[in-house]
Amino acid sequence: MKKTIATDAAPKAVGPYSQAVAFGNLLFCAGQIPLDPVSGEIVGADVAAQAERVCENIRGVLAANGMTFSDVVKTTVFLTTMDDFAAMNAVYARYFTEPFPARSTVAVAGLPRGARVEIEVTAAK
Image (tube, rainbow, N blue to C red):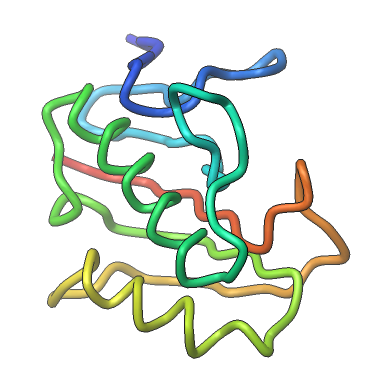
């Protein structure tokens, strides 16, 4: 059965989507950008600070379903420039540990609200 996940520990959905959807033992998280959950504003001028906020938002969504980063099996990282890859990766490595989830990283022309990074995850318990 499909269940919508919503938490104040991550930014509210600002359109016709859910923060995450649980289905059985799987959790499909919407992409998180570096929005502060309280103010709704973008946090951080550089990609490292933005990636930190993104990962904290992901932590909140995972926790709302009784999960942690160790339950994540797949991530997709969107960057507005691959020049930010190393800085994003350094932050990413503090949150996602071995055994690492599968990951795709792609450069995109733009992200919502001018963000430099967005990360979506799929987790399994």
